[in-house]
Length: 329
Ligand SMILES: [Zn+2]
Image (cartoon, rainbow, N blue to C red; front, side):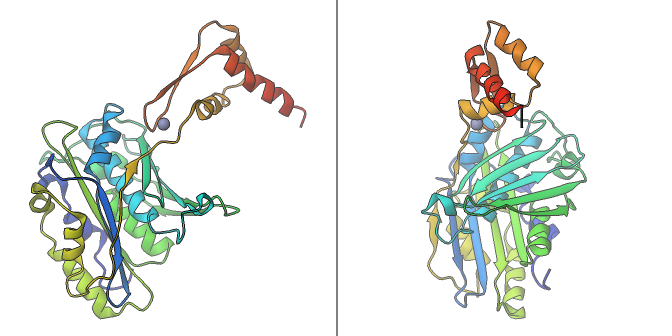
């Protein structure tokens, strides 16, 4: 990491969710991206309270698991958006998948976002709850140690780009900062904060990603570092309606910004009955035959959005037909 960019720990410390006061009036979700006047620093900021709340409504989540999922979904969005120069064409839409494969009790945590600001995510144990002595979620120990896998892909690419770094802080933002800096060689600072009010639907969530572009001077990086350090606790920021523009203003003091591009991030799951059927293809032939032979349909629930698909014996039988054709090969 280039000297001067905020360390992962600092970035996290600035968005300590224990100090956040969830506000139901944070306004519509928005993602803003721009670059500094000199074109050497790129910044994206995000308010995603509504989409995080929507993801958490779909399944039962304990606050610890919900916090981790919210952070990871925002992290994926901040990395994915802006990656494709022209994503009007579906073949250019880039997807970014983050897989936190830690050995902690939360199990694996997976989020997928794309350059059109659509995101979905899931954790293996959404019921997991673990708090620090002060009552804040213990994200680090919940995720544990292990690899963080990042997969970038576009339909036009022959194969995906993949990178892996070890999970170091377990606090999501710090791990993603390490990945961007070491694996993608882009000095970066990321902050992610999620906070809950009295109910799980009362969510406040925001984040930022600042990256040094080629030509960034030591002075630019020093200014960024000071701005990140000087960011008030997000309790202050999220206590009132928060605009991602406010975050840009605070983090780009002394650097100026060019035109700001606004997108609306959304929770989006592309699951379908066909995709659900394909998950059954993992069963062995005897198990499939048993399902086809029975009169009842098989329910398959999407891990990402909780939608349930009822697959009848007729439908499952098509898997056997396909398998049968493929068998001689
Ligand atoms: Zn789904």
